[in-house]
Structures are given as C-alpha cells and as structure tokens.
Length: 176
Image (tube, rainbow, N blue to C red; front, side):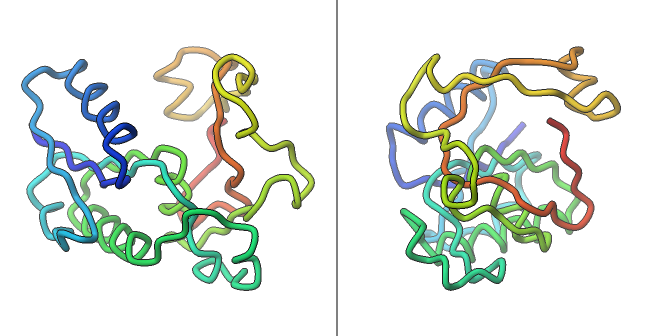
C-alpha cells in the first residue's frame, strides 16, 4: 500500500505523519507530494492522500482577499498544488484525509469558506499554548463516519489553530 502525504516544508512536522502511518502499517510506502517537486500526478499512484497541516490558505480563494493581514504562513504555490492533488484524488476516487490546514484547504477547494482568524471572528483561539491546555471537548454527530469509528458521541481533542471552517464546501458535513 502507498500513501501520498503533502509536504508541510518542515521535517520536524512532516516526520510524525510518516511515523504515524507506518506505526499502523509497517510496510507502508510513503509518497511525498510537494509543490517544488511539481509531482501532483503521483496521486494516481497512491491508495490514499493525507493533506498535512501548516500555514494558512490564502483568503482570496474563499472570497476574503482583504483578510490577508490576518493570516500567517500563506504559500499560494502550496495552495494551488494541493488543489490539484485534491482534484486528482477526487477524480480517481482516492480517499483523502485532511489534518488542520489539510481539512481547511479541502473545504476551500470544494467551495467552502473559513474563519480567517478565530479571535477576530469572535471565537476562542486554539493556538495560544500546547498540550493539555489546548484540549477541549467535541460532540460527534451520531450518524457520521467519525461516530462509527470512534464509537462515541463525545471526545476530548487537542487543537492548535487560529482558523476554522465557516461554511462547509459542497458534499461536506460537519462531523464534530
């Protein structure tokens, strides 16, 4: 089995994705997908795609170009590369798992919007500290795939982000 993982351009942050997947499946092959390598076509050779965390999606992609001053770590070449990788995965019916920014970029690709900056949109920021201090409860929707996997309606999760989905994109639902 081969999994494509998008490059987050930081080895210390990328390695845990690889370690996590290989702890589940020791023989798993990893395909690093990145804008500098221009290798989105490699999506056709993987069984699943993981979109990693990282900097913010440029707000112009969801109609809030004036919010650019509220963002950090924007990389438009990464945005466009990941849009292409998502399109290729969807066309080939390859499963996609988005982590933090990955979920956000997938939402934007599918026509959804983001809260560009949680505090200025009236929400608590989830990036002020690390570890248990960022832990908070979530409610899992009973008829979601997440509920079927987690077998519970409530969990505690750690969050480290200052953006979040505002309006879900086409075909997406809020699971928790």
